[in-house]
Image (cartoon, rainbow, N blue to C red; front, side, top):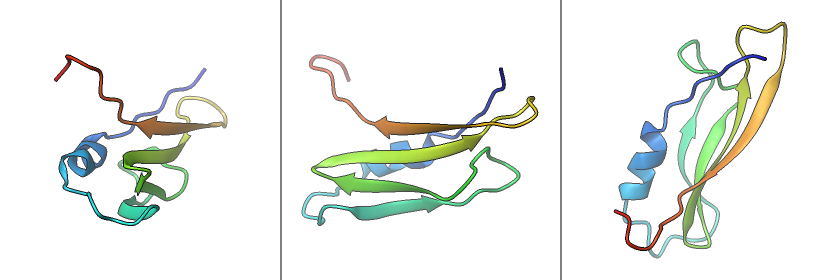
Length: 81
């Protein structure tokens, strides 16, 4: 089964930004693949429909080959900070 890591720092920083008024599909940040992350290709954090999201394609480690694709969305739960 392999494993992969990714850093949520840029995603959390985007959540803290005041993005009101930006047009749908605005790219807030771009993350490039490097030796320090498991990204298989560029990952963009976008602001669409009033929500911040990020699509990632991660290269698996500790296996012969493989990738996993993820979509992150921030969900606000009532009563939770």
